[in-house]
Length: 215
Image 1: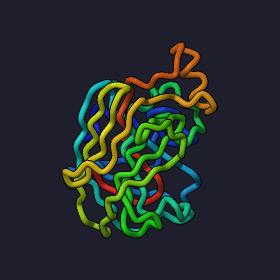
Image 2 (image 1 turned 90 degrees about the horizontal axis):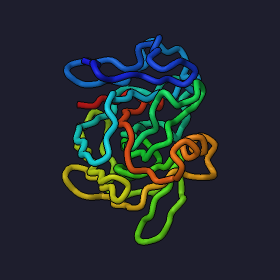
Image 3 (image 1 turned 120 degrees about the vertical axis):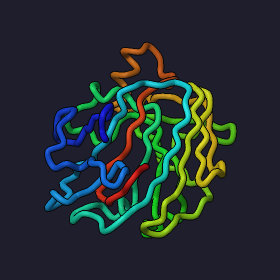
């Protein structure tokens, strides 16, 4: 069930999911759009209750069905595991994405041909020894078709190191996790914290307009 998990849908207060975007079906956390007539930029995230610094999360995901009407092309068969997310209580009502490190999960129907990628809303990292502020960076792991379960695992070591694994293979590794001083959503977090080090946070699962399941 969804005990311990809380939804944050753009345009709604924390805990409000009027269209039942996040449900459990057949033992899997399911992102579904049965009650949506149109996407309406309703980017959503399902947050786990605990904050972590050093952790490993392992799950399987699969994309199913068709993208909801009005979903952006880049969001076709696109979802993610948000690592070191900001506290959902600090998100604005109309904020699309939490400041976080997105372990991006894609299916074969997306234009990008790899999965296990990294996107950095309100954050940046060091990759291959160089500070990298590119918003999305691709791995070399090919995507899988609809309805195929794929194993995804992230190993997170405070603010020092993150590894992305797909089907047991390390597909991306990066270091020195930071909040982005130039990002409007990150600035208040940096001010409260007193620095821009990103050493802990919440885990959330993403709703980006294409049905997906996690187990």
